[in-house]
Length: 378
Image (cartoon, rainbow, N blue to C red; front, side):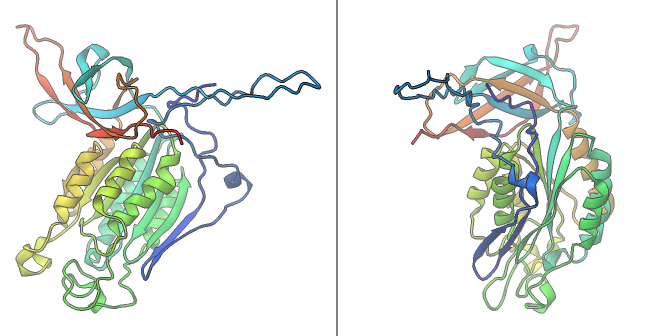
């Protein structure tokens, strides 16, 4: 029996996760009842569906060995949005409008459709380090409103905060009320006041001037959310990170975080909340925008810079909501059949229907840069 990447796993309730990353690297996972105990690792949309059909029952008293045949079929799914030259979303495209290349080789599409109604799995990552002191109330207000609007009956979301720790504030739920309650309880964590209460540029801020950086564990949060939560889900998956983009003290580097998100087929949206003037020396030491943009671009999302402006933050959530509701999915079996675990580059191009003069406009496609092929069997 093939496992379809388009059918959500009925056992999608995941194990509650509380992660503390500070003096060392500690990950504790607690079980949450009988249902959670039954949870299985669901394949990512890029993983090969594997047949788990039982072998034929041998005849009684037979000494013949029983063999099991596992059949792997690699199917790559690409979720993407399309915009015109004015940045407006383009709905209602057909299979004939788009093409996909893998490592510059044209691929034959097996499936192409709009995915506005497919269940959405959403991870919200909330920066609660000292540098977010002024903007946390805005994040809580507009983040809660966004979740109330975007979550439909079959959708689910979880909430993680990150600062000197990485904490699961709310596990998977379809309840905007529970997510809002968890978000409202989020507090700025400055390692018990170390570093002048997290003032940027002093101790726990983006530019430390004394002692070891206690940090903002952004990369660890992305890595853990991808591996421990989203990699176990199928279908549409997105991660929304509200942060200034600065990282301090993560065990994992940015590339490891990006790779984890790519392997989980997660689209990252980064909402950049940062007042550069606060980051020491007129903002010259600030580089969070580059890091956040890199994570978003590599996974098929984008970064939206809102500064510390509430109206811009509200507009950013609206843009993300619109894009999630206007997605396409294209599926194909790669012409490169090697199961070598290598990274494959992807390029998707779309054209609008011809105009009256016979000309067509090229459209801008927002899609991840590539994926990792199946690893060799051990």
